[in-house]
Amino acid sequence: QKEVEQNSGPLSVPEGAIASLNCTYSDRGSQSFFWYRQYSGKSPELIMFIYSNGDKEDGRFTAQLNKASQYVSLLIRDSQPSDSATYLCAVMNRDDKIIFGKGTRLHILP
Amino acid sequence: EPEVTQTPSHQVTQMGQEVILRCVPISNHLYFYWYRQILGQKVEFLVSFYNNEISEKSEIFDDQFSVERPDGSNFTLKIRSTKLEDSAMYFCASSGAGTENTEAFFGQGTRLTVV
Image: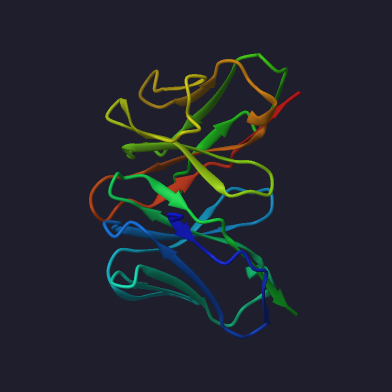
């Protein structure tokens, strides 16, 4: 079983709509969860992190964590063309190792 | 704003040569990481380093790889005898400590090309 799974996409969302990105993880002992944005040829940029069950909002971004279902998601409201990127879900497992999913390519349609 | 810096930004080396990739983590961070990303593929964990020793390493991190923190600021990745398949972007990252200070921040990466 892969440790962190994401749909590779591409996910196409009209400008102004809500983009929903999903991620599941296998290590039930994981405590820390991150979303990174990566533009082509650039390094991953941290955009959200969440440690507790529930929702965490930061501007247009909302991270959602459900530890019972081992599921973490990222919602992007009012999507902009500049949001087009690959979004990497990352999970810190019980060994303090941060594991990345393969990433979901998001394309915002103008 | 504090940031992780990596040098060089691009390194070209001949197969079989040794390379050293350098990183300066954020100054008050305690955990240091190296990741690599082969073009078009996922970000892969190589190694984590804490308290002056390796805390975790992946299958990729074989005997050809080593890490060092030679002084209080630098964190290096050495590849002893490079292979063509080592060509990738190498990212250094650092994070704080504690149960709620674990987010990792990445450097801009070193693009390693082995020819």
